[in-house]
Length: 385
Image 1 (cartoon, rainbow, N blue to C red):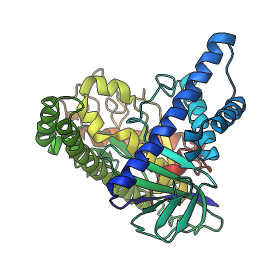
Image 2: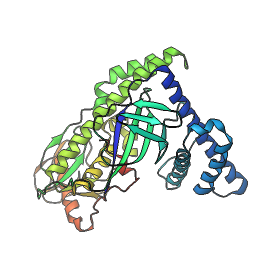
Image 3: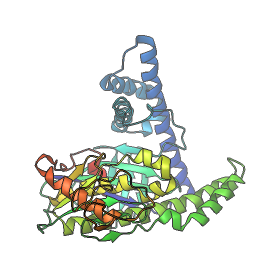
Image 4: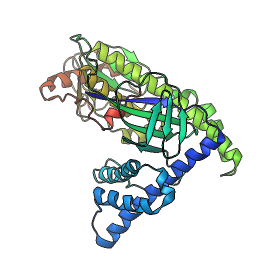
């Protein structure tokens, strides 16, 4: 059994349909803000947390007394409460920096319908409460039992339909074994360097379009906030943002697919990306190594490969991969160095990748196989097919 997510773009809507969809999201944001306010006020009054089921029960009663809320399906209201509860759980686990905040209608982007409230008619999604037909580009057929449907608006103003399906007898995607193991070093000059000496360069989509990006940012800053000119300039910039994100994501998926095809065991170093951003800023964000690792985890899980992470405090760059001698310091400007003990000349990145492979294979018995994504988990929603 597996859970897949299909993402389809809705065809351009007329002004009447857009206004109804905007009202749909605006009403969902009002429900979200009301539920969040109820939970906050309950805590201030009783110094206790209002649990999810009591919050959902309260919102169901309020929905019956407010006619304008009826366009939001009852299960969608439950899902909005689940979003708030999940936000607090992640905050207390220190996965999020702040608890859930109030959202205006413009910042509220999506509504999720679970098992009711919608009907599919070919490449049309009918939202029953609105009696609205959304025709979308069906790039591939929906194969499986539909679990939930999400209607989402992006920063550009386009609408998307995300369909989560469950497949009982999913075809096996396990790739054939190659018997090869490799270590990989993340770098600023080369995106990845493996222990065999191969180097993978990132397309750096933001860096290569930085001039145009800055030009659009200046155009937005010259407009009066809230004006039609400001809205048009923001949409133009949103188009560039989406193009940059798509280029980066496509490269990550292609590289992850190539690596899982070549190797059975992949060893990576655990890195503190937040501290690296403080030092190198935009370059780290442009490379987006954390997002790449999430994709590699998913690919390893579904293809039956093993992903091993080593400790970030291993001195992989300063240790000679031949004799094990460790130098005291290794500034970043030194891309090649000679071991004072055995005299071998090392490429900094290749040497680090070999050391990552050595440490990863030595701890292979304690290595953790990344589990397959579970139903409803964040990892299960990574691929859009």
